[in-house]
Structure formats: C-alpha cells, structure tokens
Amino acid sequence: MAASDPAARPLDAAPASAADLQAVARLREAHQQLKAEIAKVIVGQDAVIESLLVALLCRGHALMVGVPGLGKTLMARTLARALALEYRRIQFTPDLMPADITGTDIIMEDPESGRRRMEFLRGPLFANFVLADEINRAPPKTQAALLQAMQELEVTVGRQTYTLAPPFFVVATQNPVEQEGTYPLPEAQLDRFMFNIPVNYPSPQEEAEIVKSTTSNTTVTLQPILTAEEVVRLQMLVRGVPVANDAVNYAVAITGMSRPWALEDPQAKARPDDIHRFIRYGASPRASQYLVLGAKARALLHGRFHVDFEDIRAMAIPVLRHRLILNFHARAEHIDADEVVKRILKKVRTP
Image 1 (cartoon, one colour):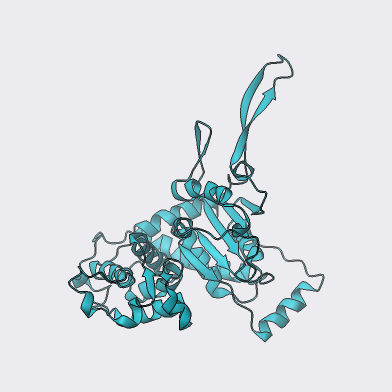
Image 2 (cartoon, one colour):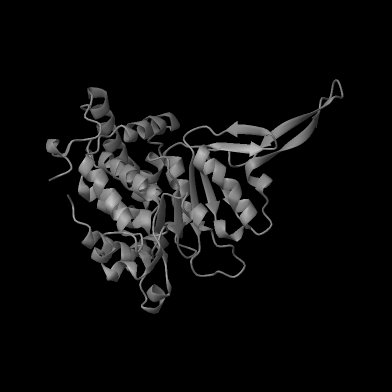
C-alpha cells in the first residue's frame, strides 16, 4: 500500500488548502532558484546542499564531515547569503570559552551620571545561521554551550535566559582525518544534529571547473531567494504536511531495527544477525522523528504535499549514520554505519 493511498489513513486527514498548495509551488520554485544561485559559487555537491536545506526546513541542525579544502565553509556561507539569513562563523579552537559564543555580561558606565550597570553583550550565537567551524577543536565545556541553543532556542547567561530569533540553524564542520588535539563530540551532542553529511571529493571535471573559477578575477553576485520570514513560514508548512500511519510505522520500524535485540524480546530470534551483531547501541526515538520530518521536507522540495516511503528511505542514512554505535565486530570486518543502515533498509519491508 502506498503512503499516499487514502486507505493508508493519514494522521492529518485535513486536505491541503489553496494557500498550502501555493506555498508548496513557491518552495519548489525557490528550490530551483536556490540551486541555480548556489551553483554560481559551488560546483557539484548537490546532495549536500539539499540535505542542508532539508535540515533547515525541519528546524534541525547539520554536521558536515570532510577533509579540509572541500568547501564546507563556503557552502554554508553561500547558502546563508542565498537565503538572506544573518550569518555568523565561529572558529572553534582549544582556547575558546563558552562566553565567547553565547555572550557575557559586561559593566557599562553612563558618561553623564557616572553610574554603572550590567549589560549583556550578545555573542555570535545570536544569528539565524551559525557555522561552528571545526567544532571538535574546542573542549567539551564550550561544545556543550551549544546544546541549549540547538534544542530550546535559548541561551542562559547567569540567571538570565535569552531567546534566539527564528530561524536558528547550526551547521558544524569536522575533519575526519586529523584527530590529534581534538575533543570528539559525545553521543548526546551528536544526537542534537539531525543529519551527518559527508562531503566527498569532486570529480575531475568538477575539480577542473573549481580551479578555473577560483583562479580568475571573476566576481559572483548572489541574489537572495528567500527571506528569514519566508523560511519560518516554510518551516511551519513542513510540520503541516500530512503523513500516513503506514509511513510513520515504516520509519519507526527502521529505527527499531537498529537496536540490538534483548533476550526478553519475544521477536529477538527472528531478527537478522547480519545487522545486530555489529551494533552496540541503536538509535533513539529522535531518529524516528527526524526520519518523518525529513521526509516531509523532502516531499515539499519535490513539489508534493504528502510523504512517500521513498522519502523515508532517503532520510535513513544521514539520520542514522551518527546515531549507531558499532562494536568491535564491525571494526574487525570493516563494516561502517552506512553499510549497516543499508542492510536495515533491505530487511525492513514497506507495509
């Protein structure tokens, strides 16, 4: 049964209004315009750009992993410019302190009265689009300063809590090769990122085009396609996309298959060993939430106001790859998280 089949009993059975359908058409048009604008600066990497857009529309956050020189910072800055979002880049270093990113209270003196007062000086976290460059270079105390902002859209300094203006989007970058002097992100913080997005090397043709465009006097002017207000409205639209019960159950089944079986589980013996013998810990329900949310955003980007099973499958690897903790069997047999997720998708059948 297809997820778009009326018999699948959608959770939100209200039909799409004319305004919703108009917004979907506007997003699809904006998606094409964004791709064209970003292509002026970024060569290739279409899948990475689309994943960043999906995470933004879902009010999620993204972790980009790739070696230096692949344009991770440039991609983030270009996307922020094309969306007309307030952009801040934070270079994470070992001496970076939490106050350096959240802000701090300072003493201000009134030049006329001479009176002193405490005033909050906002840090770079107060922006719409925040790039946490090389996030694993900073110590855990500084990394943890992002947690409240990413989850609750708030920053607490002293006894005062400040609200971050929507949209709020964190893109972090990480170098997977050089680990000396780094602080690996704990699982609790990795789980705050909706997607783990690998940035791979370009093809020879793409690299030749990159070299030609970056070694000339060419100046590129980007036209903003969406405003911050439009992004917020589209984020609300994503939440309103109807999804069938079967599609939700499919997402939950994928996440559930990632969890190692327990002896007390009556279905344990029926679960395949070629998956669970490689997994130490599986994904939490947050993965199921992101599978469905990501599928909704992907459907909208493709001009549909309903979720298909293919939308769920397309979200599985970027959502799950950083949520699976593999064991020594996986390392011994050179099995990575992507391969485990692919095996899960083969085992979990659509309803």
